[in-house]
Image (cartoon, rainbow, N blue to C red; front, side, top):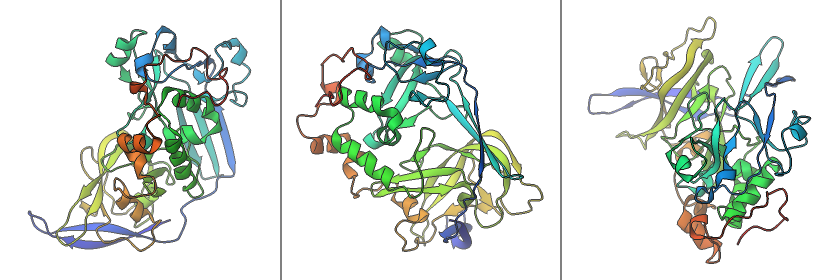
Length: 388
């Protein structure tokens, strides 16, 4: 959907400030790219025989080295040589470090490049426990020593754009590629059936989209995310207790011709209050990851993004939702306002205590269960052997 802009005067202490807001229209911004080129820049695979993703159970054998390679979820008996024929990832579920997409207009084609993990990527794959259970996910902790102290003293692996490398739980639970990880999460006690059902239901609520390992999911304002300005249809998913919506880069920078040719921003939505409005959102630039370049012959009103400042339009703060959004419940505006609010169908998935209540007294979280992890790999463990 394209967005339309307007202006409004909002009273502030320092005097009146004109801000812009958007409403939604029904035009789709998506443009098909019929030709796709995939470039695998990965030369080796490393088997990942996961036993546990709970850091309290880590042992020396859970220490992994993914340097200059791609991780493959496989049986412990598989070695790197046996995986060398599966570079395309068809025969084994794999985990990549990074993906970069570039679109070309003449002729219309799309290039997708996959990159291996950086050199010296040694440490532990672990389940990052977010304050919202549904916002948790898989991360990699760089550790100098193969023990619990190494994990606790380490730092999370970052993407080239400065955000933590992270595969969302919703993606893990709904993609066949990560079945073995789901099995481990169930055995550890992280994933009761009710949380799994919530992930499936939320994923099904996404219209005409698939959630993948590189999807960015926002659960609240003030949550950092990156924008690839070279791609007008760069998509951000907005997760609420009622479902998932999404917003494109060209919807964020709406009101005229899309202004940018290239650049990458690390940014976040922020809440604002106005005396004569019900509130709105701004977009603050936290860091300029890659230099921003305008489209050829662009002569519009969006000012160059500045680190630490909100996006400005015609010299004024570019704001969202300074008016009550339209009645369409599934609109982008509605999703943005709902982020962080309670009362939806899956509200229990936003609290570990509430999730525990619906899961029942027999379900034990990993920090409540002193049982030692199963030494078998997930691939060799029988189906349905998860702890309950």
